[in-house]
Image (cartoon, rainbow, N blue to C red; front, side, top):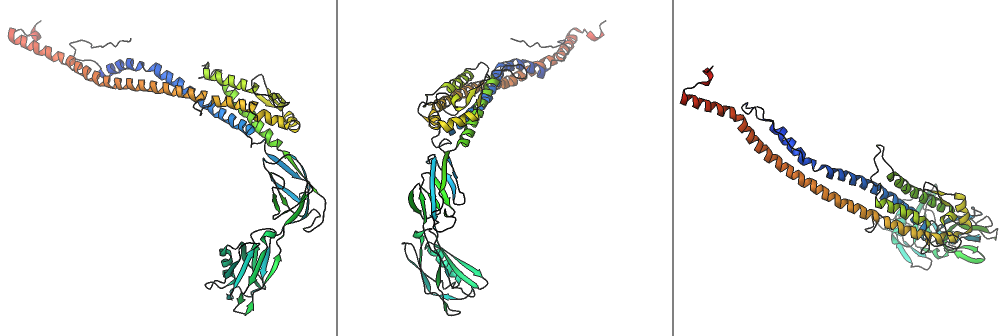
Length: 464
């Protein structure tokens, strides 16, 4: 243990000693006890930073892998094409779609029922009466002209507010204004049945209605099956596929057999390749983290996790993960999906090999990633065991252990600082008192001399 020496000078000199410097010197010894604790804290904090990086990168790897192992992920997604986009446009192909080719002939398009009224010369003319509306086999509505707004615009507003299943608008041109009614339901089921007792009280003319367009269903043939659709947006005829009818196969909107349109539904290989590329990137990021922690920093010091058991566990789980999983048909290893491991431990993706596997062994690739006991699910289990968020994950447990050690060290430092603060107060008071005594010695000696002189008659100051 270090010692502190006090330099008083001449005891009779009255100079005493430097109390503050002495207290600081004494307390520095006590503060030295904290040095190894603080050093250990610095190491643990550096480990926390490294663990955090691993946690982020392992989470990214889990997310990338999940897009391949999820039953509704990219392996389930489909894309489609139409041989004649002037007749049929593919809107979407969901995971329920099955890859294959379909032949579609469009005989006629669906139409939405509409009606329009006779002209009202002036939009502000006063109207009277009512209209009756029924859409298809729905409820019949009788809608009277609003006495508070007995104009064409007021009648349109009243119809729209009635919820009759039609949309009313006022259409104005140079000859006057008309009331336009459009069914809210396309196809034959949306046909408007209409009656009117409305008159223009300004001119005395009755308001009549004419048919703008009949409500009819689209007629088409899908893979030899005749069918109809109330809408030109067709869903469910081909499971999981939605397509838009744009014209009849004969080139017009009416009848005629025309040339069938070929609709091709395929697996979404481009999205799968992108997802596999993301997996490779995420995996290689974790490998880079491992390589960093196995080396030294710029000053030649070992990295925070050098030799750490958690680092070894991560490395082992990743290596074993690439080799795990049961075969699915002809696919028994990641190399058959275009993946290879380099000497540096990083993955490389051969896009051409992956494309070949997807085109020739798609079901086996899917099984190797998604079946029970497959590579994909085995690797997912391994990553979950390393997680920083799961309470059983290796990173989570390592971080919790560090947190506990840090709390203990911080408490020890806080307790030592409390003792040092108390010692400072005590030592300052004691040394100040001692210093005052030392500084008072010369005056006390002088008093003794004076008493001695008075008693003996001896005067020191005059003695040669």
